[in-house]
Length: 111
Length: 113
Image (cartoon, rainbow over all chains, first blue to last red; front, side, top):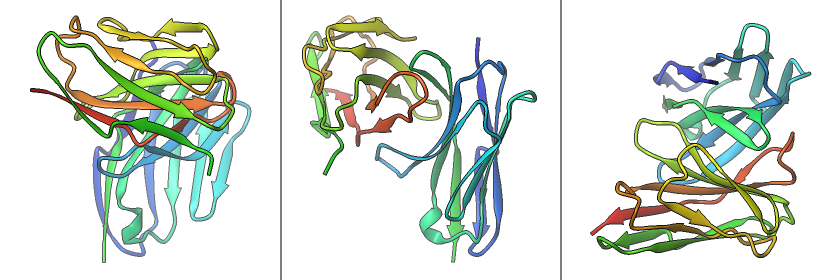
């Protein structure tokens, strides 16, 4: 059974720092991995999707990597800003349409 | 603007009552999904539909029912058989059920009176 773990559960950093969020999964047989952002009381915003054949994806200050063989993905946020404060979720697509989610990393960036 | 609309934003259920959560998308996506989110837990899949008039149970389907009569609509009914319905419910859609990203609505928060 696929399990997704995110470390750390919470992170508080000063503005301007570069930071790394970690995601690990137990079964390497995945179709893709997706990173989301969730603001309090809101739905999820898709940030990046990495196909199983890809190693990384970039969007602006965000870079996500995927090492399928070791069951790991990282989300790198460069030059963090207070507006980046949110919960970040990773999810793997293991079966047709079935996303398995981690419990998230709650990020706070203070001025 | 294309997107996913969930309504209502807040919903209250009395004991023994069935309630229906609405999810509409105008993205022309084939696949639609319902998730439940509880505090401190990740999202869990309730039901999903790859095509009109077809849907499959997810990991926690007991006490819930769905229909998919139109491509753009995927309503979720929380029945009285669901003993712990208080949660945040999220609807999502994707172009297909394979390698396309899932896009989410803003959610419905259901509470028990």
